[in-house]
Image (tube, rainbow, N blue to C red):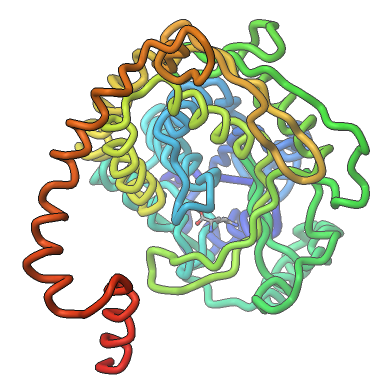
Amino acid sequence: MADKVVLAYSGGLDTSVAVTWIQENYGLDVITLTIDVGNEKDFTAVKEKALKVGAIKALVADVKQSFVDYFIFPALQANALYEGQYPLATALSRPLMAKLLVDTAQEEGATAVAHGCTGKGNDQVRFDVGINTLAPDLRIIAPAREWGMTREETIAYAQKHNIPVPITVSSPYSIDECLWGKAIECGVLEDPWVEPPEDAFTWTKSADQTPDKPTYVEIGFVKGIPVSLDGRPMNGIDLIMELNEIAGNHGIGRIDHIENRVVGIKSREIYEAPAATVLLQAHRALEAMTLSKDQLRFKEKVTLEYSDMVYNGLWFSALNRDLSAYIISSQRSVTGTVRMKLFKTSASVAGRKSPRSLYNLGLATYDKGDQFDQSAALGFIHLWGLSAKNQAQVQILADVEGPLSIMAHREQEENEA
Ligand code: ARG
């Protein structure tokens, strides 16, 4: 009996070809593992296809709940956005897939695991680093990184080996989907000057197709985790799926980004992430109300580090554990409700409330009931501006004549530059 390998199997062309290719080139028996992270698919058909192309066993794992609880919602609490743009959908799913590959290999007594990533992307990094971290002795096979076939050659290989070539292969795009969003690459999108054609989008409507009336949704959070929609308590999976529908219908969540990959390439990435866009905005709005100025500023730094850590494939790291400890602690008071207005491709905050709100009407109001002691401002301003005033007298005003000194400085510096 041959040794076994567990292959992460999507049912697409590359991973189907990989089943045969691994058998031919490595002499291993292939067990496929198809992982449901909310990528709508007919998993029965995928399973049948795996067996048809030669897998000795075809497994399907629905991990949507773990994905939401241990990956998506922690990232939401962190406000994670890579380079301020990308909600990290694919990047969050890969470490979970790596973990499942490792666990399945152990259960099935396999000596190797395999995935369909090429050698140019981030996903190979996330898979390989994750697998190496969890199971350093497990061999990793990445056929698409090794075989050196072009798209046409892969199709020819498939035809030669009776591997069904799906009609969708004619689709000009490479697509990766999960609950948190969809990534669209390749084809005309590789030219950053070309506006993404409408057919690249399937989760979001274009502006001219969206309703003429806004939809309002009330998102209830407990400690930074969304738990209800319009007052209805909801499981995270359903909440995200419903928001993807509602916000997608208003054309919200299209993202066009020139992204810095881990392997040094800049790539043009198109995303659709309606639920992520709305939830990240709502979560930030609630934090603005429930965290202090200092907490908010410190958390911005944590957000940046956390987003890079996830993107760069370092999920299973001590850094993740440390940052997560801070993030969880920061969410103690992030409880309340945010009302979002969804209209014509944009989401905006229409209202927010929290039992832990730091917004104090008695301090903020200009109407009656004002409790703010305005006379105290004088002494505060005197000390607050003291150092600037002192420095201006000794250095700034002395250097340049007249009251327009800052503009004069600018001219001086521009002349010197
Ligand atoms: N650029 C994104 C990322 O690195 C999306 C990658 C999409 N992956 C894919 N296999 N098509 O996370």
